[in-house]
Amino acid sequence: MDLKEGRYRPLPARRVFIPKPGRADERRPLSIPAVRDRVVQAALRIVIEPIFEACFLPSSFGFRPKTATHDALKVLIDEAFGGQRFAVETDIADCFEAIPHDRLMAVIEERIVDRQVLKLLRALLRAGVMEDGAVRRPVTGTPQGGVVSPLLANVYLDRLDRAWQARGCGVLCRYVDDLVVMCQSRAEAERALVALRSILAELGLAPKEAKTRIVHLREGGEGLDFLGFHHRYVRARAQRSRHVTFLARWPSRQAMQHARDRIRELTDRRWLLQPVAVVVQRVNAFLRGWAGYFRYGNSARHLDAIRNYALVRLALFIAKRHDRTRAYGWSVVAFQSPDNLGLIDLNGIVVAPRANRPWRGKPNAGGEGRR
Image 1 (cartoon, one colour):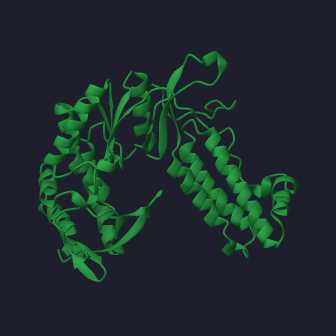
Image 2 (cartoon, rainbow, N blue to C red):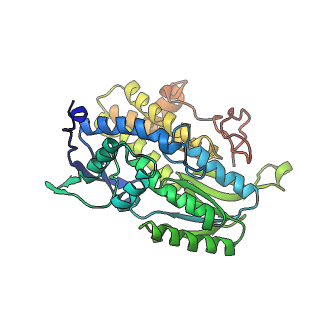
Image 3 (cartoon, rainbow, N blue to C red):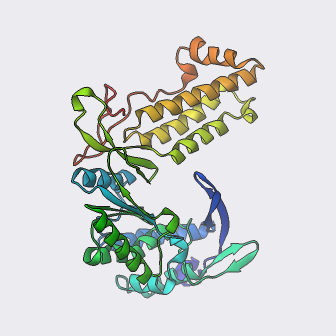
């Protein structure tokens, strides 16, 4: 009713800091809007998203309808197969916090003329954040955590995508603020990096220097991390295919550590009074989600390693629950139970990516995709 009658005023979002996955020394600012503000933002996104979605370029993949992270990952596979073996890897420093409000509204006003919608957007941007009891109202940023924030970031960074078409070189793949540019040569990659810095500076943004580098994707060389996967150029293991080299991917070191940390938390001693079936159910729920994402890669060995880690943690949990030795717990899990206490099996679910083919496919029954 307040929104309809023009009395609606958004409240400052509550600012909290959460640790970044795999980086204990870094924290990510998260802004949590009030419930009514989340409802308003969701309604606003439903109205304006189709307007901007119609003009977004194919190089943008993050937080877009009918677009998955694996669509962005597929670009790397296809371009490496086509000879683009040099990758510029970077992300935008404090992207959600650095977008200037005035420039963002100028971009929005190019597509939207409704005064009420523009007024609401300005109010949401000016609402500010509450941190340690104090309200700050900065002139930059679309606070990360808001329902409409990813869309607004994509709207502003669409300027980057369009400038790249005119001035960039190589193939740009952008997942919101994570960027990879695939290039034919190191010289082209260096030109791409210069162009990227220039375009971002014009937008009032900058690449994060600690994560900016040029990677030569070649057999025996280094790889790059993108969207949770580690990408590396390898040679096929099968004897009949030893002449084949390709860009493989599997869960990154940070992703593997996150999985182990989560399983350790789910099997911690504080759950000893819980039924074992409940603990296994929680572990299975995590494994289904984690493996459901990483199965689209050359990840069979890594999935096996995570399941084996889960078995070891369950054995320790059983041992602590009965105040027995680790050997007793392993005997219960691995030998006395025919189905490992119901722990799901991740063997055989891997789908190996293939260049110039859809990434969605049937699992490889014969273990294809193991590296």
